[in-house]
Length: 381
Ligand SMILES: Cc1cc2nc3c(=O)[nH]c(=O)nc-3n(C[C@H](O)[C@H](O)[C@H](O)COP(=O)(O)OP(=O)(O)OC[C@H]3O[C@@H](n4cnc5c(N)ncnc54)[C@H](O)[C@@H]3O)c2cc1C
Image (spheres, rainbow, N blue to C red):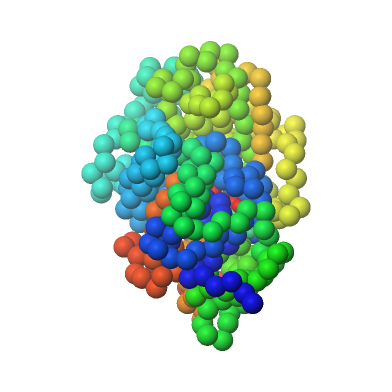
């Protein structure tokens, strides 16, 4: 006989942990199933930090979501007794750029009345001597952004979910699921079967395994980041250096001030295109991985170019338009698809917990989810 729940969440990572919490808080009987430990380093959420920018150049539809996420990270941090959102300020830097990310970031700030400053390269280097830029570079500084402590956030959401009554089962791999005749779902794991009224699929880079319909629109990519011990650590301390994105000739990079590690964390090139399968991914770093990070540091942040303390591999899962997929499964309204987030989703996990809980409970979320609908790919066939 299967155990019965209101909602089953497959994947207790960034999105799944938040969803379990929001559902349990609303009194739902919720089961969260996670294949690995909570947290772990096999998916998309490890590596200490994820940037939270309010000056959202990826699209203005994201700004109301990120504003709510910003508020929730602080509330959840307080409830969990953890400092989850660190408001270091964010600095987006670019040279002349076809995509005009600085212009788009500025537009987002103006539309939503967010404070910001436009800085030329001299002004950036005067304020943050860690950067060595060229005259063509300019930047937009937004003071309220920063980073979320990603693994701590997953743990915080998971602990709060358990405290609110959720049943969370780490190290229990889901093998498959099927709809039931009564309009619910049956989920089979290595250890048993469970039934629920609805299902949330938040399996990150493994989304195609559980929602084959999204396979044509989702592609996992291998990504690399590392921590380098700066030659002048004081330049990169919290309070002296921002969280940043850096769009340069060599690619689109990002990084953070020193936090939780004596090394400066840098990642990129942001949209590096090495396709992968999460099951067969080369997780060890290669010399070219470190070299790709050093190229950026040596030219633009030279005082941070010291020993690479660690270089690690992670997975982006991209859609063709780089927007998210947050939707009900076509023809199966009891199944909610909550991935992937095209390399910029973690900051939204707190608010997507609310949104996904709404969808699983057949409520209407407070946000416009049209940009994330599966139907936008209909013409792709
Ligand atoms: C290098 C890198 C840098 C990034 N930088 C940023 C950033 O600065 N800001 C930002 O907002 N976003 C960023 N992102 C994107 C963000 O991290 C992701 O959008 C987010 O982590 C995705 O969360 P998720 O819950 O979908 O995936 P995950 O956290 O990976 O969770 C999926 C979970 O499903 C589980 N699972 C899979 N299969 C099964 C199964 N069969 N049974 C049970 N469980 C299963 C997995 O084990 C995993 O725990 C970055 C991503 C990467 C890789």
